[in-house]
Length: 595
Image 1 (cartoon, rainbow, N blue to C red):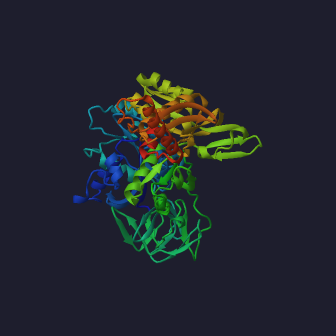
Image 2 (image 1 turned 30 degrees about the vertical axis):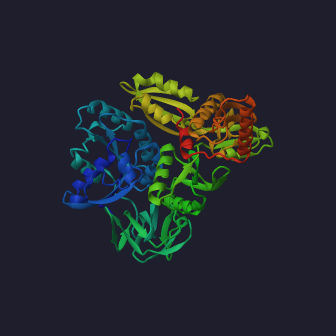
Image 3 (image 1 turned 60 degrees about the vertical axis):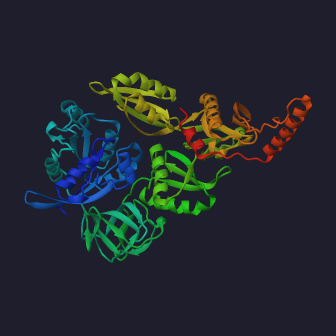
């Protein structure tokens, strides 16, 4: 055990985590020859296309230092705020962390939040300045920021470049010297923490685990503490680039277990594995249950695909424990699921993965957040979608969730960022200078306002220089109304939203205009209306497609024309009574991107 080191790599987006991990793997000859490609740990097509890490990836390396061979377990983590749950799980399985800071950009919001997470778990932090080969690197300034943030010595900060391989040997040496070996007793009863799992169509569910105490052998009878189910360990092993089987795994190691489990409900991330004959006293305290921030309905395009969608979501949930879902039905879209996501990017990625990995074609409704409704009878109802809102006369107050947002930016963009936050009903808490020309602005904002397009706008205002991070900060009463969209007087529940009273009229008007462009014309007039309760606040009309019935009348009395037009009018009226309007998928998407 003294020769094992478990560590993860944490950083803000695009600070070069995956590239640095490539160099570590190359240097220790874990990956050689044609297996070596850039971002070798990002094995999902989506990750490569977008250039982001979505999943944490674990891999084992062997490294010789001072004549002795060490086993290094590396976990590469995502940098985007929507995937911070992946980071928290990786941190729970490690004793140390490489904190990577881009020498051209300095410390950013996600760097700080990931760092606090690591410090809470008492990890040993090794600060690394990456991208030192670039002309725009500012080593002195960035080093000052790191020293100020961590309170470490200047000599502790390592300088490296993932591109050229500079400083990689120093990093490997620092991992062995500074990060403590895992604590644990190989002779104690087995205690292993599941920190991730994936579904394999041939072998069932593969669980990734970190062994805290005890030893596990191939073929042992084990029990999952949370679910109480018992299984045989058919196959165990360590994680190289692929899985490599071994006969035993003991305390301190990170590996996988395959026990032929077919049902996804039986494996929970954060569960503890122990022996049936000699169980441990208590389960390891796992991870806190994650709280979804954004809710949206996910519906199959074909009604008969409902069960397939359920099993696809269950398999996805194995691999991404932060996804939550429950069945719901909608008048416009039939049966589907109400899913909870950590943010808009997370929602987009899940939709993409459903399409690519499971071939599921889905419609996603307008995303929203959850609200607490106090009724006049004194009950408290939690509302996840506008359709579940009680009658307007029975509501006393509605509370909406607030977040404490931290934006780190250059001083040139303060004015525009403040205007953006105030437009989103934000309240300034404080602002302080991080260094030279960088400032941290802290705002309290309603979560419902930032769900749509806050992050995109922030990036474009600041030319990509502002970084953003947030955490929940309680609930506050607010003047919210339910905005309904009606087509020919029928409400489309998938398009309704809860919105602040001040913004309702302008949003309703914009939604009507957008929908009138996107809904195809029918044989009859379609009225697109926005309403709050019984009051119509905006209207657009999509004109009917009409045949020119008077074309054959050339001259003669006007009554001949009128007779034909009246006949057409009656037909249109009858058609309107039985006709129904189909809302195309792109109309749902366009409503999200109204600005």
